[in-house]
Length: 387
Image 1 (cartoon, rainbow, N blue to C red):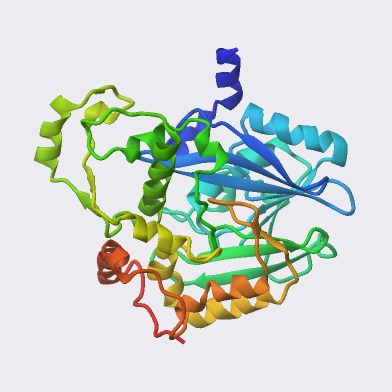
Image 2: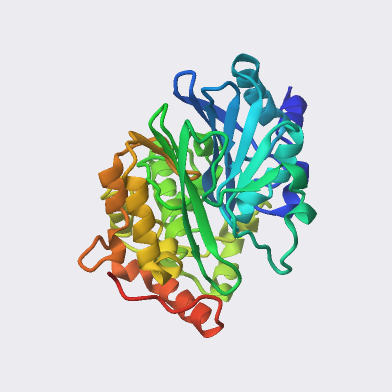
């Protein structure tokens, strides 16, 4: 049975985006709106900083299904999806809603091959690095791939869409497609807004080791699976995800942290050979509480490094999306579905306006350093003034 499960969750092309959990990707499916909207969740991360990655499937009024932001089409994932196909019809449309997003792009070509009758619709300003290759060279089927460029779409009677960007950066533009299903009153987004849950999402709780790894105060502490440790580990993982190095964290110098390895109770490969270079200060939880203050937020990385390059473009897009009558939002990461309306969505982008929302400035210190380096090397242009 273990071998069967491993085979079902095996992802052969893991080396295209070599991040945790590498070649084994578990999939869970949840029904969000009865007989209408489903989410499929897998896991991804670096150094046990893990987060859900999500695709959403929507039933079409005309029959069949629309898939937004595919995940890895493992045997398990396809089995779960085909159970819906058997009831509601085949996959008709596949939406790739971002211009870069390698963690999303890598799954689209293999997913499209599994559904040869589906038409693929993509954000227009695609690019790749280090060489900007044609989409067909990346595996996108040439005669089935179309641009979401403002023209009419065959599923337009049920859906509206709005393009954020392009926001011009040095390597290539940032772009995202928001898709609104009128039938279920559901808004689908990729990275633009998120909600931070108080406890780790279900897909992470299945194997809590990454949470327990980060719940420790030092590498000499035993890993212990308790509800309190899962919660503490999740809060720290969330802060790593958003800030890389929040204000409540000290990174130990390399040599002293390596010396501590001999005292570690577990020096296995799974435990990074006993290496644990983190020290959390008293009061670090305040940074997590600030992320939870509002139901919807824009990720700090997007706030500091991308969206503030073109505040007016972002606000115009947010206002267009906020004109739709949605009741829930499903992003590709963290919590979902989020019970939120258009006013809450629009308010999430007030960080681009004077006297708007603001996360603790001290948590942005590393992102500020990264920003300076990106501007100096012309990877990103300088930020523009708030509106």
